[in-house]
Image (cartoon, rainbow, N blue to C red):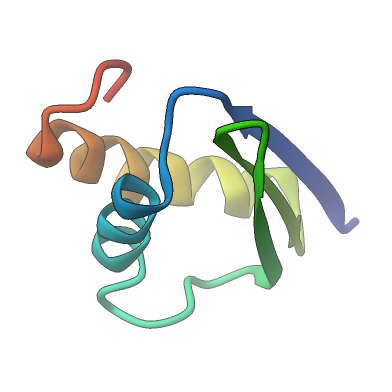
Length: 77
């Protein structure tokens, strides 16, 4: 069942978002991602994703997001 994932990153500026996005999307659109949108919001970034399943999203976070954050030295990665 598709899921909508929303996240606000109040301390992430557009430059940092672009670096992160470039890293996590380096292999192209990840399996299970239906849509990805972001916007600047109050000095940070707001993200809305639609995924085919929670499992697909969780795998993407584990396999791409966390390693990319760690490579960039971003806390939480």
